[in-house]
Length: 90
Image (cartoon, rainbow, N blue to C red; front, side, top):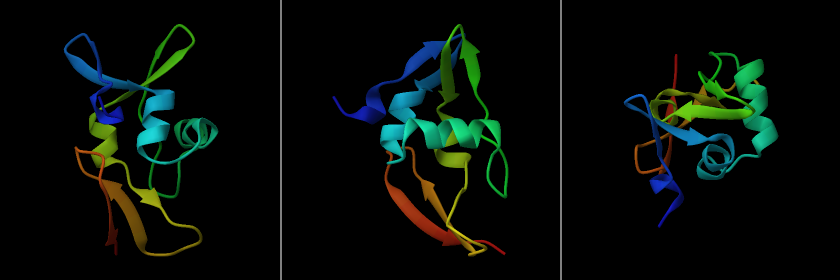
């Protein structure tokens, strides 16, 4: 079973826990918490809080633009399979 298959269904929505989302995107859990709290230059990650757990909806894997360092126009995105690709934004 791969990380991408660790989906938790809550109220007809599909979610990843914080650590699984961090592992899929190859970032630390602390970096993901920072993107939830402060975001990047584009937006914040949407999440659901269940008790002490932070759950991130599956669509955020595809929709969230992970910005590169500085003011680069290069953005890293992931497809639904968790594969990374880059694109240039205006």
